Image (cartoon, rainbow, N blue to C red; front, side):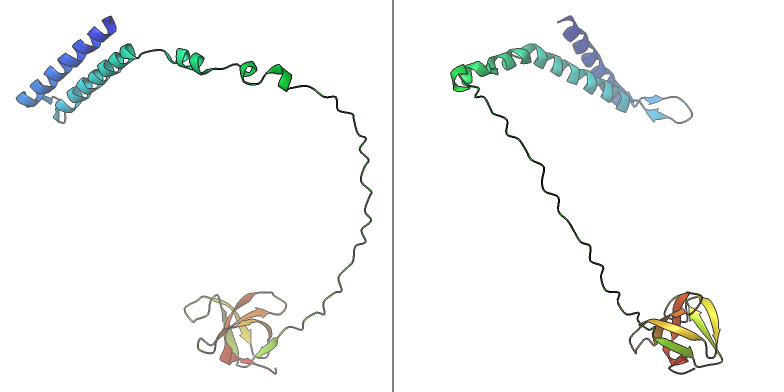
Length: 182
């Protein structure tokens, strides 16, 4: 009860100081003048909430331990000991499973696909990072250089993804610069 009286006094004085701060337009002195009412409001609210919590603790009808004890029912009262009769269990020998013999079948090797070869049909062709002239040039290829076609784009874009034989570099080249014969 003495804690409650002390908290109530702090809350009462906090509210009085808050209202006075608002009425007098009080500011803290310093480099920047800040109003004091927000701090005084926080003190008053905090003390008031502490008073309310203390009152609720005092008015609580019974402690939590008493509630738990009133709900607790021993297991023996729910299931009589005669209902649980231990019956002996005879051990049954467990035999290990029979091992399975697996014969691995090696798949037939697939015939190696011949790369779709094309040849550079102009004096010099640029291989680019992407399918347009806006992309950076990766390599310049001379006439007759063999390249593998990785993917052909639609006819509207006019670009083909190629791999340079020997280097393994992949890039895009204008489809019009490729020929079937060297």
